[in-house]
Length: 128
Image (cartoon, helix red, strand yellow):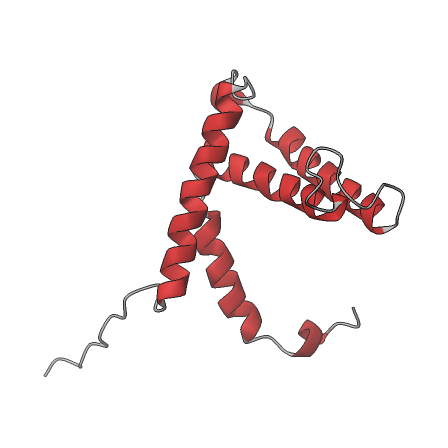
């Protein structure tokens, strides 16, 4: 007698997760297209991945400067948003560009990482 097979559940199980993954991919592709049109992908897949990650980090450093008050509160290029918001957006844009350019499924990874983190202990067992 064959053991009963578990019914496969459709992944992701929630509509908001499907919408997020699809939306993330769509926006990432638009970011990548713009980046390529501006010449940032002229080297194609030979683009320096470590440099790209360093540039993501530089956006976070600029966000830290904004948080520390070393820069004006409102962004000079997008005055409807704070410098902090714009620098965080710059980081996400760079992540999306990297994701689409190298064919990474970061949107789905975010959902799965959130599910994993939900099951972890308080502060993941760390002090901070």
